[in-house]
Structures are given as structure tokens and as C-alpha cells.
Image (cartoon, rainbow, N blue to C red):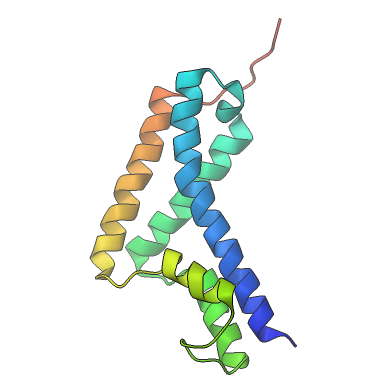
Length: 132
């Protein structure tokens, strides 16, 4: 099995989710300021809220993200060390993983989650809206 390739794919998925959470918030705020109605679609807002809620919950209970665990297992199966691997692995890991105390991440995720909740109050999603 191509464990290295699968690990890179899991890492890419992980980065895509992070990008969705971070830039999703930017899109929600910017889109509302510019009148982009699609940013308030209920499916988009719920997906965004659930994504950050999972991250916050994992950090509060001290759980390692399942994607991180899966990626690590795949890399172990591929028998690679942290200094080997593909271009994707090298650069995406630098973007995604930082070395800091866990409380820093918990605080950051919680504050970010509260900002997401605040956008629900300031820019509520459109629920059951019908065009005339």
C-alpha cells in the first residue's frame, strides 16, 4: 500500500479543513459587508460552525485530532521519519503544526469559536428564505 501517499492525502485534507475554517470566517464577514448572499446559506454556515466546534471540543477534552492520528499512523506504516517525505508533507506540515503549549491552542481555538458564534448573531444565516 502507498502509505506515504495516503499520509500526504490526509495531511492535504487536514489543511483544506483548516483553510475552510479560517477563510470561511473571512468570507462570512467580507461577504456580508459586500452583500454576497451565498455566504449566509444555512448549509455553509452550519458546516463552518460544526468544523470549529469539533476543533474546540477536541482541544477542551485534550483529544488529538483523528486526522493527525491517522496521518501519523500512515507515516509509521510507510517507515518514514520526520525528516523524510514528499514536498507536500514537508510544506503542509510547516503550515499546519506549531510547537506551543496545549493551552495556547485551546485558548486560540476557543476565541476563534466565539468569534464564529458572534457572526451568527451579527450576520445570521438565512433560514427558510423565499424569494418573491
